Length: 218
Image (tube, rainbow, N blue to C red; front, side, top):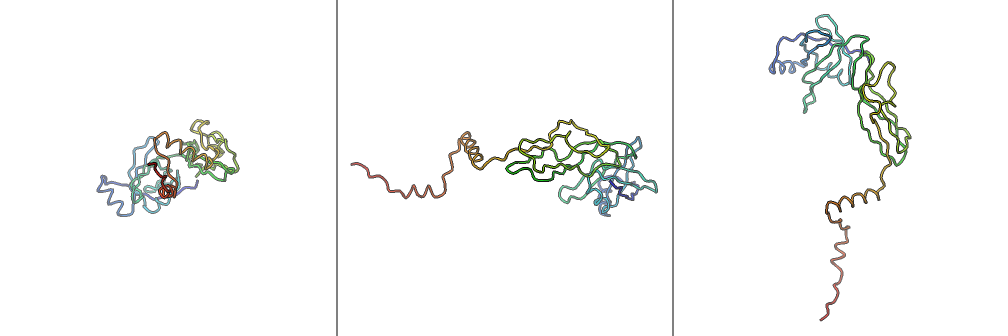
C-alpha cells in the first residue's frame, strides 16, 4: 500500500471549543502515539485526510515540524449525521515491523444456480508488515455448489501475511436456496404455531358471501 503524505501542525489548544475551531478551519484534531513515545497532539488537513482515510488501514507519513513518522489510523471518530471526521488516533509504526489489522473481504463471482451465499465475516484479522497491508482480500464463490464452506484457513493471503484468527472460522457458507413451495410451507407452519389464522385468498371471501343460502325446513 503506498504511503500518503500529510503535513501536520502541533496543537496547543484543547477542549471542545478548540476542536470546533479546528474543524471550522477545515482541519482535523488528531493524536500521534506509540513505540514508547509521549502522545503528540496535532491537527491534520481536513480534505487530504478525508481522502486518505477512505482506504482501510491507510499508511500515512505524518510530517510534524520537518520530522516524518509512519502511522496507521487506530481509531477514526466520525459525525453520525454528516459523516465528517471528528478526531483521529494514529499509532506510530516502523518499516519491517508486523502489525495486526482488520482487512476487508471482497466476495466475488456467482455461485451455482439455486444456491444462497451467506457471508459470515466482512473483514478478517491478519498479521502483516505495516508497509505491506493489503487493501482487501478476495474470496471467490464462482460456481461453488451448495454445501460449500469457505473457512479462514482457505483464504489466499499475501506473501508474508498470516491469520490472526482461528483457521476454522467460517467466512462464507453456500447453501441450497429454498423453493417457493418450501418457503410457503415454512410460513404456514410458523403462523400455525403462533395461532395466526390462514390468510383468505383474494376473491374467496366475496364469492362465499354471494353464494345462495340453503333453504331452511319449516
